[in-house]
Length: 323
Ligand code: NDP
Ligand code: 1BO
Image 1 (tube, rainbow, N blue to C red):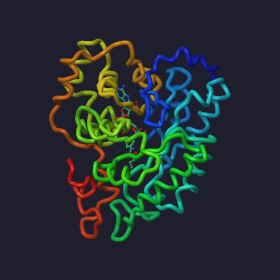
Image 2: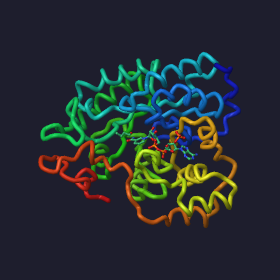
Image 3: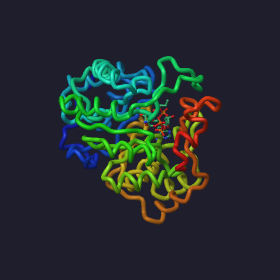
Image 4: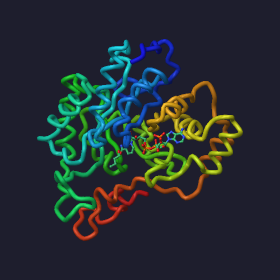
């Protein structure tokens, strides 16, 4: 392991403020589908590229690899307080009696003694071992208030600094805000020029909830959308002498949101955070906003929809008919 070459004062990464008073680094490393490369990817990101924000989840099956990397970078001199580590509570754990155990397991896998951010991964409760798509009865009742209370307790015990949600609709967020004693600091959602998600972005901004964009490059590679080769993205990149990946990351940052591109390739890991000290001119930002065929890449259908039995009989049901 190389010695840490980045000191906090060297960090050019910007931060966004959260409702709690904490801050979140603007660019983080995604780890979904990183597999056995997650260890090297996280080390490269932190030591060589200057990332301080890592996004992971129990469901990604890489937390042990991420934990090994986190331990190594801290041994190399990076301070825990300078890192921002996010994980997520999976759908099978969305009942009040399972939250603490799931959280402890995540903390142990990551070799940490607190998390910066813990998110509800998807807003539906699945029976353990549920099929994809779920069979009748495998999508269970979701006691959102009970689960949130347990997450709030973990904040009160200083085991988590901020809590939040992913893949929520306005309806579900409004419900949560009605009973939350500790507000959701972050709402993580799919967002890129092919799915701008304007309604949720505006709703979150109005409530002071910070937005993190997932799949910012279109999650291309495994059935996603290849925005890297979109002609508008390519044109803007060529004009600005940047890469398509940098243009897509910058588009998100200029909307005031943090962004978590995934890569397990060292060059692309470095590339994706070299997005400071320059701007997308207004006309290019707007051209990206006009990309046609607005569509989610990750609609949750396979995870949650059972056309015969519900409770979600369609993708539209899952998203509360808000799209
Ligand atoms: P991204 O949009 O980040 O795209 C990742 C893909 O793009 C990979 O195939 C990667 O390949 C490739 N790539 C990365 N950088 C570049 C580049 N500069 N040029 C060309 N190709 C590039 O997809 P994800 O869906 O992974 O989203 C990012 C992260 O968001 C996830 O990893 C996860 O942490 C989080 N997430 C959260 C969700 C939630 O429900 N809360 C849902 C989905 C994602 P390579 O690795 O070879 O570089
Ligand atoms: C099953 C999809 C989860 C990505 O965060």
